[in-house]
Amino acid sequence: MSQRLEGRIAAVTGGGRGIGFGTALRLAREGAVVIILEQDKGLMEQAVADLKAEGLSAHGFAVDISDAPAVDATFKTIAQTIGPPAILANVAGICPFAAVEAIGADEWHRVVAVNLTGTLLCCQAVIPHMKRAGFGRIVNTASGVFRDGTLGAPHYVATKGGVIGLTRALATELGAFGITCNAVSPGPIATEATASLMNDGSGMTELMKNLLAKQAIKRIGQPSDVAAAMAFLASDDAGFITGQTVEVNGGFVYG
Image 1: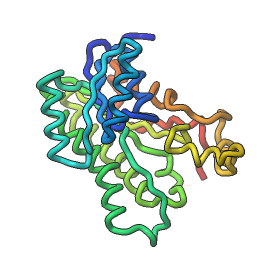
Image 2: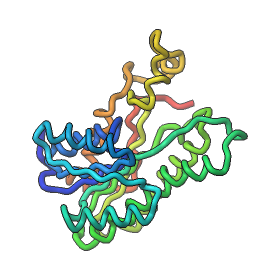
Image 3: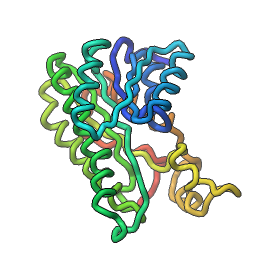
């Protein structure tokens, strides 16, 4: 595998499992010094151990990205002890399911706090360092649900639309400083969080069969598929790409 990210420090939120871990693994294999940010300390420690077992460079911090003082303190510690991140991959997110009339204020605010505000807070923490360096790569995680308004998660859909808007706004504001900001929009991806939606114990669910019928590539996506796009957008190869949302969905046809 190429070492196009060699020596660069990359922070990955939600890096303990799923797409986040897949992204951390890919960035580390391409030479980055990876910092895994994860609310669950146990997941964080296991992910760091897994990367180190491959001989990769990895560190970890347990942090709730919706907690502004905690995010600020964590990134200050990272800058002082490891170095300022040149790459930020915002992957952390939550997706509770509920009909719109059943969503309470607390649940709404929590989804917004993690998926949208947390993304902003982490961006704010790294941007000053990136500006000083005259270089930065921010890659956010959107979702195909923004295109089709997936049933049963209106708060999640709203936040992913917000992430796309935020990505475009940051790209416009930061381009003059050598910083790019893009988003990756995954389709159905096999992770721990989606396992029950894809397989009900007796085989592939009808939901998954229907989704695959709309894909040009007839297989379920893997975290490594998304991670490959993340790594590209984090590299010098994507230096003239900003404000874009790259859909990693097997050619999924919406509508």
